[in-house]
Image 1 (cartoon, rainbow, N blue to C red):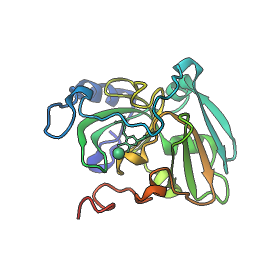
Image 2: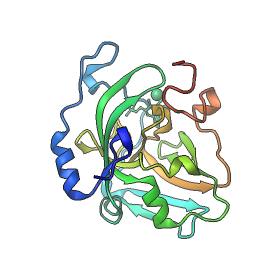
Image 3: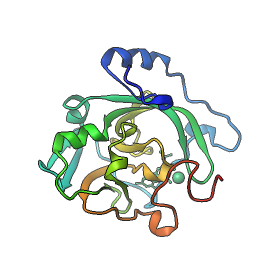
Image 4: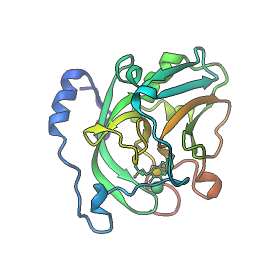
Length: 214
Ligand SMILES: Nc1nc2c(c(=O)[nH]1)N[C@H]1C(S)=C(S)[C@@H](COP(=O)(O)O)O[C@H]1N2
Ligand SMILES: [Mo]
């Protein structure tokens, strides 16, 4: 198992099957969260979002990369190494969901596939909701627990959770994890995302920002 300390990123088909079996249902009924959604609350800043079927989905990767390209949903599932992990999901407003399972492409593997260009310092994420944006420093984007997720909770990423493809930025609050992901752009410097222009910290480390924990 190739692990990342306590966060439990694993790779390799054999290990993945073992981990898969170990994934129980997400806990529900914890006080202060909504059990109907498995503990999650569904968030959108735009009201309803158009549906995109996996067969029609493309992730555009561009900007300061050596080989700009689009990835289809199937390419994300088959042409790049698959990474799974399970950990608690934290929204900065106070709710969290334990033991959420994710599967997809670790962002560093995707960056390797396109080749990070000279001068790239940040990564910008866009959503096909037409409004949401997020960003990470290049160093943060190279963490193996930052995942371009094609699955969660043991199945596809549902539309309400931001499917067919969304980000999962494990070490940071939920607002760093762009839903309905449409584009990844390598940029020369980090630009504040949707919530960051509205007061949240660009560095969204769980437990280390936004005044929610000391
Ligand atoms: N496109 C988009 N992505 C988004 C959001 C959003 O409103 N729109 N909300 C963020 C916030 S604040 C959180 S906590 C998580 C919530 O994910 P969920 O809706 O699957 O529970 O999505 C993040 N990504
Ligand atoms: Mo959030």
